[in-house]
Image 1 (spheres, helix red, strand yellow):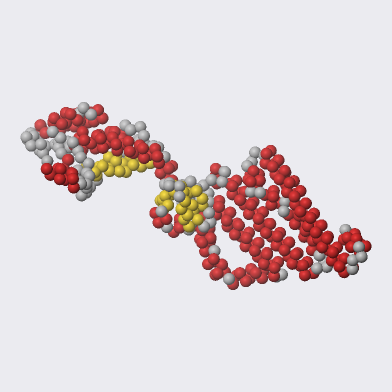
Image 2 (cartoon, rainbow, N blue to C red):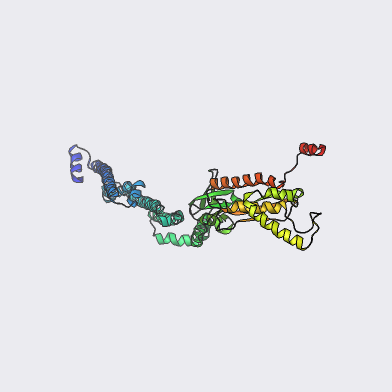
Length: 415
């Protein structure tokens, strides 16, 4: 081909030296054009092959190869090999261009190789995330570590080509600069170590609900990578937390609650102290009509009457002997109500307890577990429970504590 082009230009009467230059340029343009055609053809061939294979196989991995443009990336190499094989030799008449061009083509090999590995790793990442055993694992962290190594090797190779020195020389230089490298990649190194610790200790998984007050994070973990953990908060904002902070700082992981038999309710009713009283017989007979505590009241009445008569207690004063209180009966009613509630898990703790009195009243704490752990349903069930208890409390002549406004205070004073 080169001889044919040279003879063609010589027949045109062009000076031999210029004819040689024109022959080299023309041959180089032909090689470039062939490489372009070769790239377009190979791109189409590889795409057809990959699409046909992906349709015939049941595995989704080849689908992710297509999605991450692996066929297009592979198609870059055949024309590049053609250029490396013929283009520098065709420009032997231009030594100033020949060597830089050969180096440029070698650099392109390195860049395309990095690009191919990067897209392959992304395909593996997407595929692993579809597998049940890997869905909650920090795959991003490991992929990023491999990519850092690939980029490191690729950059060393490129510098070696540009300088004409062996890669070992650069590695020796980097050994001396290790302190600077450690400083630059501090977060990445800490993140990698933290990712391993998080995985081994199973502290956090993708999909876990975590709360980290120092970063105002309260939501589901959607991504764990080398440098950050992304949390989608319940207001749909995204909080990014450095991965190593999950090891060094404290946070709350609600996975235990999600995997347990229920979600806890631990909330108190504040009872006004002045409304707590012994129950007189007339009121007790009225409360006996409440079906949930009818049997309990009857048993207690019998026990109290027997003991008081045995001890010949003077009941002209209600304080004497044994008596029932309205707060005690209400506590018993609340417990019976919760034990009969269909949304409460009876296999876990069901308790209504009285806490130490405070300046705001006597706390009557509800401590139970709701079967439905979905946030919206949980809040609805909890609201329904306290709606009922707040409405029921007046039947026991009890009052809940609330701060009195100036207008209410003046009104009560007039009365």
